[in-house]
Image 1 (cartoon, helix red, strand yellow):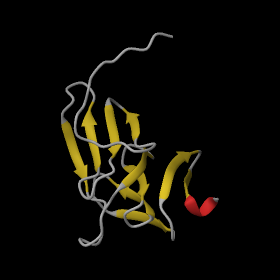
Image 2: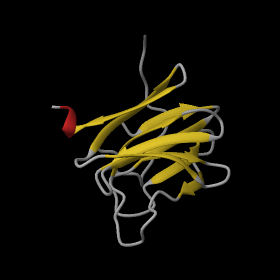
Image 3: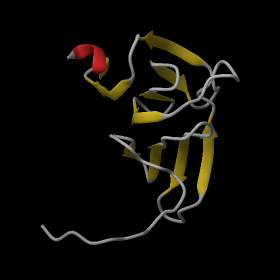
Image 4: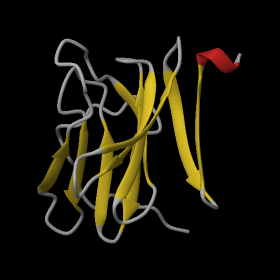
Length: 122
C-alpha cells in the first residue's frame, strides 16, 4: 500500500483519536476551549459545520476523540467536562451523556453499541 498526503488542514488541534470519515466528510475533535467539534468537506477542505459540545458556557471542551455513529449522530468525548456525548448533528440536540470523574480519551461505535473510555479504566 502506498501512502501519500492529499491535503494539509490547519485549524483543528488533534490530540488523540479525534478524526473520523463518512460520506466525503471529516469529523474532527480538537483539543481547544471552544468550537472543538467540526465537520469538514473532504473535497474542498472547507468547514461544513461546528457542532456545539458545551452545555455550560463556563466549561471548556478540550476533546480527545470523536466518531460518526450514523449520518445523523456523532459521539465525542474529552477532558473539559469529563464526559462523552451522543449529539444529533442535524438538530444539535444531545441524545445521550456519559459522565466520568476523569477525562474521556477514546470513544467508539460499532454494532449498535457506543463505548467511551479513559483514565478511570486504569
